Image (cartoon, rainbow, N blue to C red; front, top):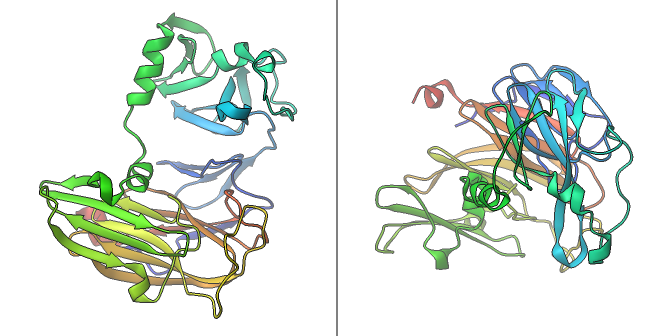
Length: 331
C-alpha cells in the first residue's frame, strides 16, 4: 500500500509530456518531455523546450535516446531520426538529423508515400540497451557518442524489439476476459473489462477459467472517466486505480479529444489482487479534470494531475510521488 500523503509535489509551468508519452520513474531521476527531477526529493534539475525529439525510446548509462514521433497518414505514426540527451543536464549529445539540432518539429502529416522520409525513419531507434542504440535499419550506435559500433540485419532488429517484454501496464490493458487474462501467479490469471460509461471491472480466474473473485469499481461508488492504461497499474500484490466520484448528473455522451470535460473528485485506490478486495482509498482532491498514473516502481507511484479544460492524452502539470509503506517495500 501507499502512504496517505505524497513524499513530494512538483508543479511545472507547462505539460509534463508530449503526445502519448508518459513520465518515467527511474532509480535516481524522474523524466518527462522535457523536464527532469531528482527522484528521492522531487528537486528540479533541468527543463528544455525541444520540438523534434518528443518520444523517449530508452535510457542507458546516463543517456536518453529519443525520436521524433509524428503521424504518417494511413500508416499511423512513425519515429524519425535519433536524438541523444545527457540525462544529468538535458544537453543534446548527438543526433542523426542532418541539421545536428533539436530544432523546429515537422508540421507536415506525411499522407503520401513519396513524402515519407525514408532516411529519417531508418535512423529511428528501436531499442536501447547496455549503452547501445539499435536503429530500425540495423545500425548499432554508441549511445554516448553516436559512433557506429556494429550492424545487424534490419529484420533481426525489428523482431528483437517487438519480442522485448511489453510494459506491464500495456499487458494488463489488453488482458480482456475473452483472451483469458494475464497470468500473474501459478494458477491465477487477472483480466479486466472497461467501457466508455465509466465501468471498470477486474476478474481473477484459475487456469481452467473458474472465477476466483470479481471486483466491480461501480459497486464501490466510483467510475473511471477515461479508462486507458493510465487509469490503473499492476505492481506486485496490488492494482492501483485512479477513480472518480460520479458527476451529479449524466455527462454528455461520447466525449472526444477537443471537448471540455467536467471537473471531478478523484481517489487513488489500492486493490489487493490476492483477495479482490479494496485495501486503501486516498482522496486526491476536487475540481480536477485530469488524473493519471505515470509510472510505478518498487518504492512508490508517480501521479500527474491538472486542471486542463480539454480532454487529451497529455499529462497535467502537477506531479506527486507517493511512497509505498515500509512493510510492502520489505516484502
